[in-house]
Length: 575
DNA sequence: GGAGTAATAT
DNA sequence: AATATTACTC
Image (cartoon, protein in one colour):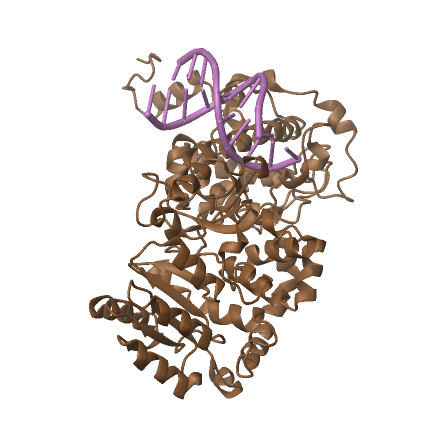
């Protein structure tokens, strides 16, 4: 069906030109879908008549890579028949109707997705993924010969990334093994950034569960948008519910296959191309039996009457803060800055459907708490710098990015950092030589404080550093965006002193402190450079080690320059 | 009613 | 351990 080897060799800009069979009895809807698809460079052949579509496919199955089939009240039987007929083709069902049993039946019969109308660009944009998915995941008996070249071609695209991505995606060894057994492992890479595929994580879960024989404990479902929390820009999310399903109600010609198909995930891409999805899971002990369908699709929850249970259950879904999601969170937080980084705004920025303000708030709380444990350690390191004094004037140095705050902190951290200081020197004393270790949270973290994913040693850590070129030793550690100019070359830059212990550390601008600058003094030229920079940019916070001039000195200087009228600020009195 | 925090539950 | 929920305060 899909494409020949030649097709793929020529297919430089996949998925452009991917051929879509579109059946929609509603001509208006059909033309809308068609124009959207064509705008995305898909090649669309539209039918409004079932028989035409079927005969077109039957006569030349290789004309199509993917099908979008509308299900309506009248053509249900035909739709199922088409699903049976075109098993090799990834078929996306779409409908205005919300009928759980129909959706279940479609999915069980092999439909890759069930989308509620209207089909937005976001819904349509990634339908190519189903082609890839099918190529990789269809069972040997189902995959067509023509799909194999697709798979091979894409494997070569996916493979080089795979090793890294496997780590980044935190795939458990167990899962990896399962996937290898299933010969579907390439797909998992597609579940990562580059070639996201709609069903990947869920498939992994389902595969694992199947292998462990407890698949009834978990199906994947799609949540509907959380009411009122998201605008139309928000994207569908994927939720994973630990819901038992009544398999007896599902049509299945091949139970394993059916379940795999049930693991349909809906994924959309936000404007910037990033995924906007969230994995959610429910605690098994919260399961309602029977009618709990878990909202097997976005549409389901709205569609089916019993879905009230799904909706209510959604409350109990647990957000899986994947590195990807967390990255988004951090980006939102950083984009907002200290003043604006509040749950609702973060939520808005993240544009991740299924995520609630509460989810964000909870995560934010944890985020802040973690930072709270991290920052004092950084301050400790700064405090060891020569010339540094802890008089209040220098307190702004504790939070050197106040002009563009990265994150909100509890006030006591920058109003009186000394109060929150854990014992500093013992920590220093216990440091391993910086030459053998880049500084990590592990080195600085308080004993007993939870580590795991909060640490850079974690594989997902790299996702959490918004500026991979820079070191960040803490979760969300403020690091200077590269575009922020010379400011970051100040030695107090958080990322600039990762390697405590008197070794040269490059900050993000390649500015390098001399060896032993920590132990003794910065080289004079370094000091000069810092002083010059500070003087040329008085609006920036002072680097550590530099004292601001006294008020008297400033006034005297102003007077010398003939400036005698100084407006009163904050009650400070001048002449 | 949202936000922040701490405590507690799951 | 991670996340959600709750209670409380602002």
